[in-house]
Amino acid sequence: MLIGATANTIDEKGRLTLAAKWRTELASGVVITRGVEKCLFIFPKNQFEKIALELANQGIELSFVRAFARHLAAMAEYAELDKNGRINLPQNLCRFADLNNAVTVVGIINCLEVWNPQTLAEINSQAEQNVNAVAEKYGRLIRHTAQNTP
Image 1 (tube, rainbow, N blue to C red):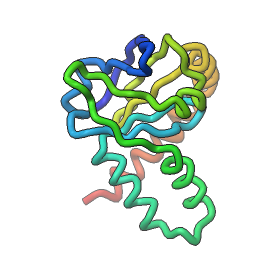
Image 2 (image 1 turned 60 degrees about the vertical axis):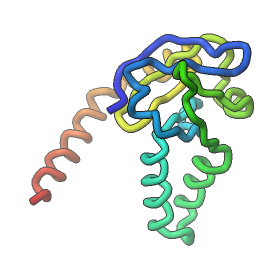
Image 3 (image 1 turned 180 degrees about the vertical axis):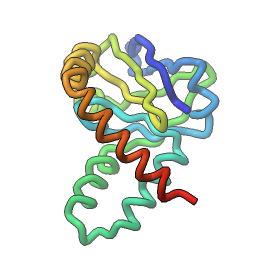
Image 4 (image 1 turned 90 degrees about the horizontal axis):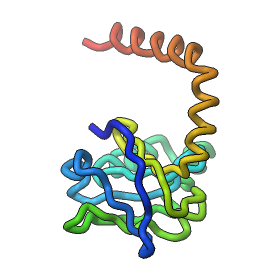
């Protein structure tokens, strides 16, 4: 499980060193792609493949499925961690997320997000204003799921 957050830097060669606590889960390779809210997603390769399969099963005739698949896949890149736990971040993806030197990497259960620290602070501020409504909605979803699970 990918949880926690770290302050980090992208070196002059475009490499990001991932925290040791995440490396085992990412050792089989990753997919780096555009996230939502102007960040990058770093998925374990097998997790990205599950999401891709789920999107494919939804059907390409649905415009929202095509749009989200396009968002995730069009700029996606496979990467491997080197012996020091570093991955190369493609320049086009760094431009998309406005990443320069300092970054914040956040584990959100099934993937990592890579943020410009200022953008993340703005997103977190907005989220805190809505946390009660989100918690209530999520609580209902969990209860519904639990009631329908054998």
